[in-house]
Length: 149
View (tube, one colour):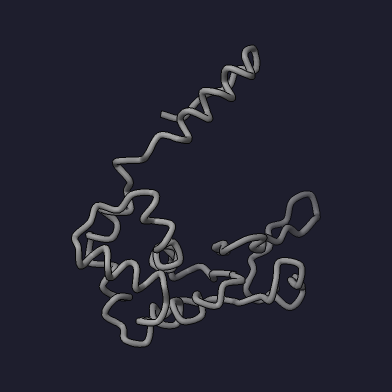
């Protein structure tokens, strides 16, 4: 259940959001995602990825057949992002781990040195621009990774 805000009781609504945010997620869809078609194994069985923390953590969780919680997901986030990437998208990132993850999965990726170093003109072949009132809009990752397609 996601909280709704009516702005008549903003402090109470904010507190309700805070309380909901702190509740652990027990029915996370990442568990079914990883089990369907054994997606995680495409990373954990690849010896070239053995040194990546996200892949090592994922292999450990799978080995123990552990139900993944939010706390566990923090350690496998990069692997999940790479596995979720549609083949029609380019993953723009600042984390070097995605170079290896995307290469192993055959997915396109673009590393940038930092969010401030992005030059939209150089990135143009990877980005799809949408015209909106005669303006071009470009989306790039400002933290972590973002899918562009």
